[in-house]
Length: 298
Ligand SMILES: [Ca+2]
Image (cartoon, rainbow, N blue to C red; front, side, top):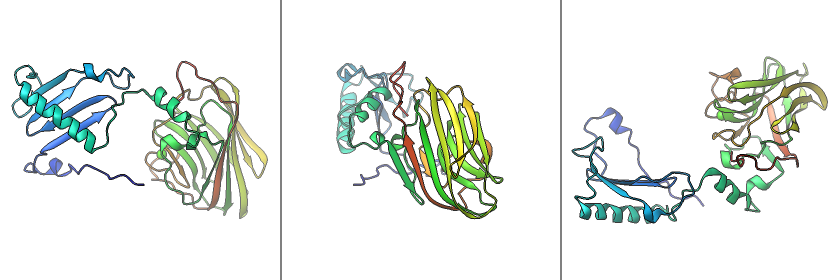
């Protein structure tokens, strides 16, 4: 069920100096808390993502933003009643917006908790996406880090077809399987270093199976290979791959939403696939690495 989408646009404040000010603004993120009301701000400084807990030890600060916009003077000691009023307001807003219980866990702890969900999307070893599927959020994409995996795309191609078959991530990192200039290409964007493998495509129209397979050959390293209709068509050594985090952006089939996972088609929008795309199947290997210095968290 879709939860209500709270909040409202502040766009008017960017263009209209007379735009009405907000009456109340509530903030809670990664363990930190704040609330603003009518020129006053109360906030806590809490180590975010620390898993520290102990929220009862948080110290609330109070600033009169109407006269101290830079928050230079903490007046919590001088205005205890005002501070209490705002703290009470924070708890009311937290209840209203379903923020409780307070949660300052780090990514690793969240990842560990999500792994215990037997029915979570990350527990599946095979993911099938059909043409037209919506954007897949980062927390639900197939977990490809430090393991062998394959991507099988079932398409029908015509000469001149191009576009993204599947892409995960964006400019900060990720991977993309796409067709450009008559070639099938897979780019693995490792902190903007691109590991690329290319293969020629059949010159005639027809159904085709396009496969990218990553074979793990050691800790966080391996070989990426392309196959066209079952024939091995190219490979690239990948001496380093992402250890525990790839990207926030998530996965797209038949396009690359938000920012491009490779500069190869930057400036071409989502670079949608012009051929007929039936489905993309991502199959995960059993050789996933165990926890190292960091738990995988992408
Ligand atoms: Ca993207």
